[in-house]
Length: 123
Ligand code: HEC
Image: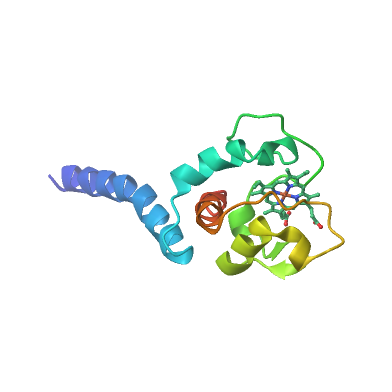
């Protein structure tokens, strides 16, 4: 009996793990939708310059891989990796660092929020 309870608890814990993670990301990015963000990285062509693990695409080498972006302390080695900085970087990297090679792709604030939520699922 105890074993069954234990297994049941384990199933609940495992089943709850993913959604809760997603809600934390949503809170951190002001309600960003990670699923939509995942589609947007293809729409905006991010994969033409970045390898994004789990996303099919050209796996470009112009920019660094965006793998584990959720646990990296800095963006572009310069800016503290906060949701706010990430959204600003995605919308206008040139304004943050005029000498960097990532172009302004005209990402809207809403789309930047969703992409940020998605990037923060990459651990
Ligand atoms: C034309 C090539 C190009 C495209 C397209 C591009 N990037 Fe970048 N990106 C770069 C380069 C180059 C860097 C490195 C900048 C630096 O470190 O100074 C970079 C850096 C980044 C970083 C910081 C990575 C790190 O290791 O800290 C993030 C996050 C990022 N890009 C996200 C995106 C997203 C999201 C898109 C699509 C909306 C995108 N990029 C599209 C070239 C590109």
